[in-house]
Length: 289
Image 1 (cartoon, rainbow, N blue to C red):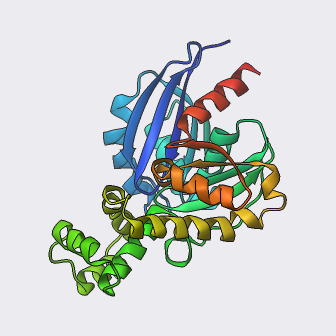
Image 2 (cartoon, rainbow, N blue to C red):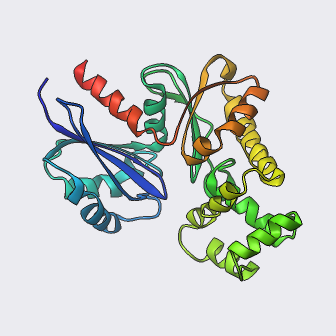
């Protein structure tokens, strides 16, 4: 097989995981950068991120790029990313920019059919037939959906706090960790400052630190139940296929997630923190085919 360097990226709103792969050996150099999302960023804003955080960690001339990212729903919406990649990696003859959902599906399912789900800063879902996505219950994003995601969990927690609905012991811990947090500060982050999804997702740290508290476990279980009801169970024959997940929320709370899926008669598949390893295998397999 002709050896070349290919670059694969899995990007969410918070961070991007990259792998520069030498195809002959399969060895790769991991790189991490800030999240890249064309819904929030222009080409001119993405280029400096690539130049300062990605290019220095890449060895060899890149001939092929496969970028999977949040906000890359179609060719038009992906243009800021496509243009930035072509600018920073002019040697690349193939530049594929696709949705993070397709990346998750390829990384989780490989070439087999199944349901692929994302539970990270945001949330999404799709049925993958082994070749392409054939059906998805469309994500409505942070303000109108994203049930079960880190941003949803953080938003729900903060609302409980502001409305004095947290148990007393949990309320005291929250005040200690976030002194001075008030309604106006939260509203400012929610409606005036950029990336409200990242802001609310940052409260996932508190949820993780208090995951054994019954209130938090109930909050997690309820959120995963909503995701299951609103997205997974709406797919025809959902119980006949494995349900795979990727994302930090699914990975770190997989005990609760598995319990919710089992209670709904669903078969749990792979639960990965990132689909990158699966994507590396997927693309190397295609190159050898």
